[in-house]
Image 1 (tube, each protein chain N blue to C red):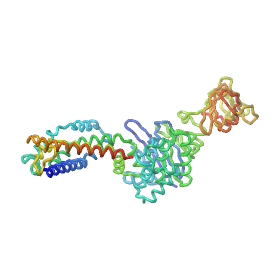
Image 2 (image 1 turned 90 degrees about the vertical axis):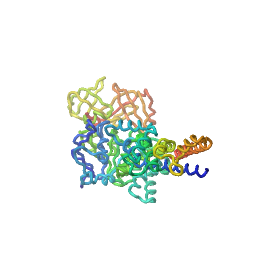
Image 3 (image 1 turned 180 degrees about the vertical axis):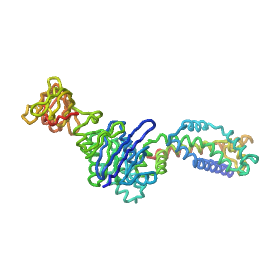
Length: 213
Length: 353
């Protein structure tokens, strides 16, 4: 049983961690661009992402299920009930969080920093990186909030992962399963692990932020 | 010799606002050039175009004889740098701030260390490497900004109101550094300012910018010593008097400025004129002195303001005069508010506006 708990915990960390990194691939550039650039409809775009912050996980899970089930348009990818399906689903789920947090982190940075970097010889990309570096605290927060949302969600993991023991079962779906099986003690153990992970990460981040100049 | 930077018929808009309107300007290699003008006249826009962080909507910019376009812009941008009016620093140590540009230029660590040390020495912040930039005072932050720009050894240094809102100590350190860098490294410097005293003492040539247009350009002497209407429209001139003038047979003019006060000026003008006398051109004494000065008035000190090395006195002599004397003279003469004093200035110190 202990081995199983460790396996589920590691899978949860792996799946949600990968989903966070995957989401960062598109969310950071989008957040950075929205934060830096002035364009028509900027408020609307920000409003849309903010609206999606509260996306119910089961709804997203259901939509994804319809898309990747065998009869669905992406059925040929054979993603249904694989850890990869959960990763993609969670990455999409946390995209609005990561974009919104990155955007506001970038917007809080002195707009002169970008021009400053350029006057010191930076290219457009280097100047954008300088801003991202200045916004490091806020960006870190974007990662943490996203990871927390991913690891604590159940709708997507259940709908497209299926909670298959040894394959796609993660902490949240495992907790639900224990309740169904009246295994309250194990359920509580898993819940304690999930809470510990979330608390430990937040604590670490606080410590890191305190040390930063 | 090519001008280091040249603007040809440059126009720049921000939305509906025309910030620069058909501006042409040449800045020579190795000179300190001042752009003077009131807030919103387009000084910053002009510097931003010269720093290649803004592009004109019309007109051309040449750097060292080469026309700057999209293809060579970022490469030429590395040859100049700019210090902003509002200090912008990276939220890290002083060392990392200064080393940023050098790192982009792939400078080796030992050379970077040495360069950072040297420029900090220049701005009198020796040993500040490990300090956090955001925890420094405003004046120190501006000096770090200047040091960071100097570290690049750029050919063109652009300074936007480098001493605005700083105390006299920081102002003098920055002015001294600007002067030294120009003299020792032959760095071409373009400075935007509305501090006319600074413009006159630091620079040889200047341009006056009003409403996005250059209204006057020439030597600093021409522009600031004999202020035009353009300059008077925004600069705070002191001791400005208006009155009717009549030409004397000696060839000078006597201007009746009211309250029984007549000022003799070395100019031939009759009718209504406006004149001014620079505060530092007026001599103060406790007793009447016999001198060549054509204007001598008796007055009473009504206000004293201490400006570190100099003291400004407001003296009521029928009209109010602002006089600037050194602190040493002030102490030696033991002046107080309500002290009776004599003012004297030459007819040639009276300028028309």
